[in-house]
Length: 392
Ligand code: PLP
Figure 1 (tube, rainbow, N blue to C red):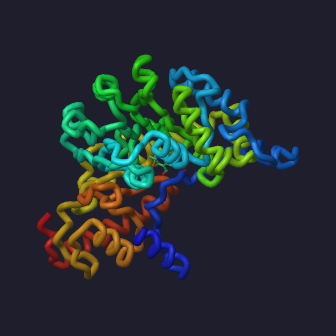
Figure 2: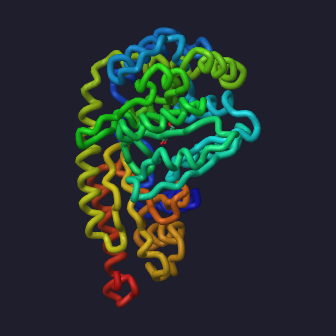
Figure 3: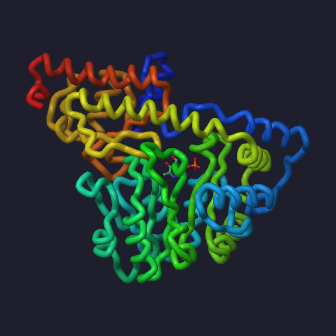
């Protein structure tokens, strides 16, 4: 937040900052969805909807999950929310009693631990690193179990690492959940952004015993470039769906009627833009991965195969003087990159990983190239000044 605040302040002052910290596609919402939203307004579809969302949309989502993900849910098992963040929040709220533990892998998406705490639970952070390809292993999960463990939280593909879980790993984790009667929350919001031919295996496809304890989270923010419209959903067995609907009916009610119609039109319309967007992200990903090789002190340990982030290790820069600042932490590094190179990226500390930084390629190729050039120039300049970076 500190970096973001500073970046925005600089930009408001007219400073030319390249922002590689964003967590949303730079693409426009597809015309089909926009037209659906406009039609909803024109036709007066502007009143409350059912708390779980309009049935037509829930049916269309169930159909999408069946067709594309091999997931078998009825419309009654789908609950539509104000963004996947809201879906996750609902799930934690209905599942957790005070002291219940949730296993969360680090590096994690920033909001998971906070949501668990708000819901009265205890986040149990399990650290992963490049030695396991940033994947949670069955051993790690077993070691984190206590009598209070209630939920295993997974994010596949992952923000911030871009890692896509192998089927074997997911099966092994699911087996632990079944054996210990745990619930699995599987955040699959980046499911459509997978590269290198990697398959995203949806957790709930791994058999009836897994399906009956899994809450699948997905939404329109990333795949349909609809972050501002606010539409996410859960797919889960009826008892979970019912509890989340009740919570929602007393807190937010259903999401915007206009947004729901836009999402429905998006799902029903031509989806060829999806492949185009994915291909463009892939092109930028390859470029960013390649550029990591030439930036002094940046080490990309694991090539991301999903989402839209690269997550290099920057440990070798810690303790150095860069851009006139002694860099002791990943936060210092991001601040100095902002002040001296005018590039905003996110410190790994935000993701429970103080040895990394997250660079988003959800921005134009031109800006991405410019941002990475600026970082390289700053770090290389320090090398030529005889700074300790030269020793890298
Ligand atoms: N889950 C993950 C892993 C995310 O990265 C994000 C957004 O950045 C969300 C959920 C929330 O998405 P939404 O915009 O649908 O609330």
